[in-house]
Image (cartoon, rainbow, N blue to C red; front, side, top):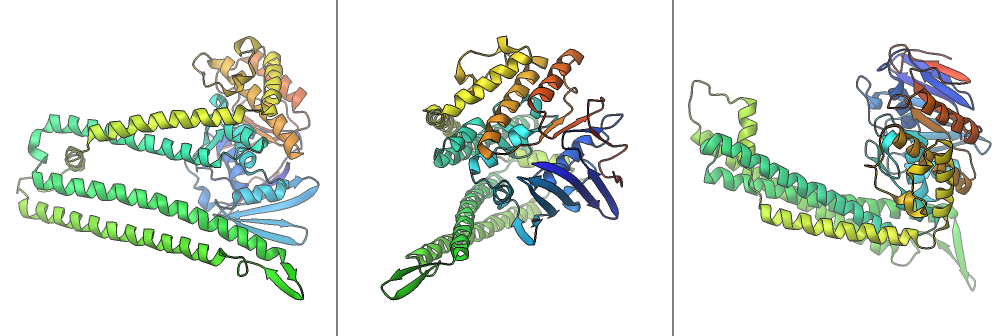
Length: 483
C-alpha cells in the first residue's frame, strides 16, 4: 500500500499533504507541536478507532485519503463513523467500527481476519507504547496486538473460542481487582471518618444499588454478544442474497436466499427474541435501581441534619459514597483466584495450539535473529525459536529493548507481506525520543534502508532524518498546509 495524499478538514481549516513513496519525515522544530496527532489522524482516516489527542477532537475532523494498493487507486473518506470507499465507478460504504475489517479486506483483497486485526501492531510504532510493544499488548487506545492470534490466522487455526474466552477472563480479572481495590479504599475512608457516614438503612440501599449495577453490566455484556451475532448473520445473508444463487430440482428452480434457507428465519427470530428479553431485563433492573435510589434520597431528605453548612462539599459526598461500599471481599478474592487460574490455563492452551506444527514461527524467528544481529543485540535473545513468544521484558531495557522491538516489528512485517502479497507502509513515532543515541539510531536507519527500501516509511521527529519528503508542522497538526 502506498499513501499518496491526506486531506484533513476541521471547520473552515483544510490541510492537504502529499507523500513520497519512500521516506517521509513529519518534522517540527520542537516537541508537542502535533506530530503524534498527525500520525494518529493518518490511521483515523483509514478507519481505525484511534483516540483523540489534547486540543483536537477527531470526531470533528473529516478526512480524505488517497492510496494505491495492487495497482488500484482508492479514495477513502471518513465522516465520524462512516467510511466511504471510492474507486473507478464504484462506491462502498462501511460502518465503523463493526465493518472496519471488511474495509481492510476489500482494499487488500485479503480475507484473513486474524491477520488484518493485528496489522496495526507492527506497522505503527507509537511513541508511548510502541517502542516497548514486543509481541502482545496494547498498540494504542483499545487496539491490541497478539502474536498468538496473528500466528493462528497465518496457519489457519480456529481458536476464536479460546481468544474470546481469554478476553472475557481478562475483563473479569480487571473487574474483580477493581472491586477489591474499592473495598480496601472504602475501609480506609471508613476508618478515618468513623461511623459518621454510615447507617444500616444507607448501607442496605447502597448494597442493593451496587448489586443492580453489577446485574446491568452483565446484561449489557450479554446484549453486546447478541448484537455481534445479529451483525454477523446480517453480513452473511446480505452476501448470500447478493450472489443471486439458485438450485434446480427437476423443472423447478429455487432461489437461494435468506427466505429459502431452512431454519434461517427461525434462528434469526430466536436470537432477536433473546435480545428483546435482555433489553427488557436491563430496563427492569434500571427501574429497580431507580426505586432504591429514590428510597435512599428520601431517607436523606428526612434525616438531614441542619448545620451551619447545609450543602456538603464534593469531597464529603465522595467519602460518604466510598464509606458505604460493602463488598464480600472473600467471595471476590475467590472469584479472582479462580479467574487467574482459568486464564493461565486458557493462555497455555492457546500457546500450545499456536505452536503446534506452525512453520511461521521459524520464519519469524529467522528474521528476528537476522535483524537483531544487524542491530548488534543478537546476544540478548535466545537461540530457541520459541523466543518470539517471550514475555520477559524485565531483562531488557533502554536502547536494547527498543532495538529488539524494532527487529520484531520488521520481522512481522516481512512475513505478513509475503502472506498478503503486498508492500506495507510503516510509521515510526519519535524513534530517537526514548533512549537511542546517534550510534544506535544509525543502526536502525541502516536496517530501514536495507530491509525496507521498497516500503513507504513515515518518521515523526524533531531530528532531521534522511527523507524524500518533509511535512513540517509549526504549531499543530491541522494548520492549513498545502504541500
